[in-house]
Amino acid sequence: MAIMKRTHMCGDLRSEHIGQTVSLNGWVAKRRNLGGLIFCDVRDKTGISQVVFNDQIPQELFEKADSLRSEYVVGVRGKVAERESKNPDLPTGDIEILAEELVIYSEAETPPIYIKDDDNVDDNLRLKYRYLDLRKKKMQDNLTFRAKLTNIARNYFAENGFTEVETPMLIKSTPEGARDYLVPSRVNPGRFYALPQSPQTFKQLLMVGGTDRYFQVVKCFRDEDLRADRQPEFTQIDLEMSFVEVDDVIEIQEGFMKRVFKELKGIDLETPFPRMTWQEAMDRYGSDKPDTRFGFELQDITDMVRDCEFKVFTDAIEKGGSVRGICVDGAAQTYTRKKIDKLTEAIKSYGAKGMVWMKVTADGVSSSVNKFFTPEQLKEIADRMGAKDGDLILIVSDTNKVVWDALGFLRRHMAGELGLLDDQQFNFLWVVDFPLFEYDEKEDRWSAMHHPFTSPKAEDADLLKTDPHSCKANAYDIVLNGVELGGGSIRIHDKDMQEDMFKALNMGEEEINEKFGFLVEAFRYGTPPHGGLAYGLDRLVMLLTGEKSIREVIAFPKNQAAQCMVSEAPGLVDETQLEELGIRLREE
Image (tube, rainbow, N blue to C red):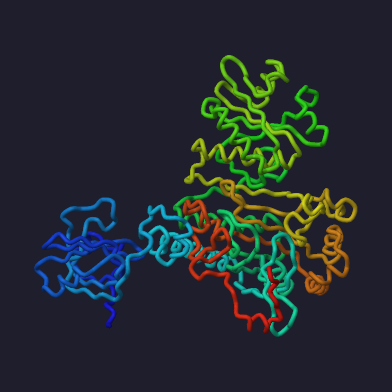
């Protein structure tokens, strides 16, 4: 069958094309037979054009058009004409094509899902028939947007002296943080590769190798529980630079964001972006990726309630914790006791045991802890919180981490419920001066907050040997509307400091050599000062397209159980394959 060579895409035809003979290829979105007229909407990734088959055409062609059904793949040739009943909702709504020729490339059975953006179909069904889901204009627009952003990244970084280099996919397992995906080696029995969680060590080796500025759009893998903005395989825009300090890295990234927003959104971003220390972000917003589009900032009232009669507060303070709250403007009437109880249940997943509420009215302050405080004390707390008539105050007491996490969740969750999260407002922020280490309560040990190659700030370098847990990191995260777009740091380039860092993590010589010996060895031969950053490409595209899940901007994502519904991966493998790899499955 000969292909009808198309002259235009379906969504590109306009009034200026009237009178031209055009050829289109695509899918039948809809067919309507009105007796002497057959209307057929033909769709491709750019949009829809209406094609008309009238009784002036040969009978054979009319009957062929009558046989069309949804999702048939066709080619159509005809003359563009002005449409009598214009459709203002369609970009092509002023025109139609008067058909003169029709080719049916492929027939289609009735699809199991509707091919329209507002189908409201179950997510697992959408993922199972992803190849049908991808025919929707929204999905094609998202993929096209992603491709444009990726091209902008390649062009921008190339213009700024970056060399695109591919790093290995089969690497050594160095478990830090999330679990590795392991790949058994047939030619090295009993040994395993890991799929990279990031190209971190290799991009540092590229700096040792003199690449100076490296860039890569790279797949990364983490075996961790999934959520809306997390997938087992995801894509990073990864980069590294030699002979730089924090300001140099940030300046390049702000230029990149300006380019992206100007070309894709038509928005002129103001730079430099604001910067905030990690400590300030936690104290004000309860999050190291704060959303600054609205208020509800945390207020510390520990000093005011240290000697109060409410034991929940005093016990938390005695154990080294704090008492903090947020004031939600005008929410006193909106949030009933039932709604507040739901919020209290929600924060328990962050470790909070409960929550105190206060409502400010013209008659005074009512509270869930009225019997433990005088009206004057409640008013003083409300004043500290900056509350006015009609405001709702929510207070949590516990360890700092629990309080931050719970209130950080509450302020953004409630802003969403109150309609304060404007998707057309883009608040960028750099969060800097993170702690170099964090305590992992589950593991009962200290670990690197970012990774063990992050350098301490220059003024804290001497503390790495004497008081490492007091060190601040030379690290920085770029945050947009409460989402971490990317993170990076100035790396350790001195081999002695790198060994001190490993020792601060209680790693012995044998463990250091086993996990990172190749990097320590490389540092012996001359290492430039260097630093970098990695963006989550999926998250960035998700935010800029206004989607709520990164699954909407990935062609073939996994579901919540890390399964590919299209190919049914992961799947069973042949016993022979397992034998070749020296693997025996454990019987349940």
